[in-house]
Length: 207
Image (cartoon, rainbow, N blue to C red):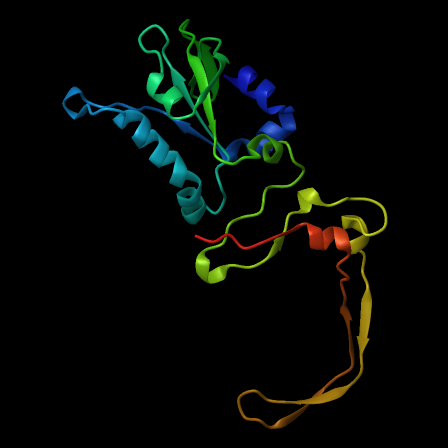
């Protein structure tokens, strides 16, 4: 699976190490004979992957971009996965994880994946992780830095350069008591949003 998945995504070793947490593995899926219903298997799989990334982000703080699984082709055909929109990448080399390494068991399996985002492969090879989806009460506009130029005028590096904004001494009021207070002179960091950054703003996701 590692080579088939790596080739399909376009991973380098360093990208694989960084982005592997964005992939979830469906270890086992079984429906007992007494629970057989028409299209039930593919329906359950579809409902699970529909909410998988949202639930994962809620509890672990990051999304899932790709689901993967293995099917023993000597015993099963993976029909329910194919009906639920999964695609076959190829076969494994017949290895299984044992402790901290891998050992050969001589039983290659079909490797299937299901993208959970329309740009899953692009995000899995991007320089930065994709923007998170905030809960409804915390919806805000965020910038997808993968859509920004890095160098040159108005690039990310240019934006992050320190731009000072000197502020004169002034007066204000204590928000609790209303008493006047003096605000000392200071210098703060100022950012200027250029057009590429405005174009990269991701609108809030409605749930």
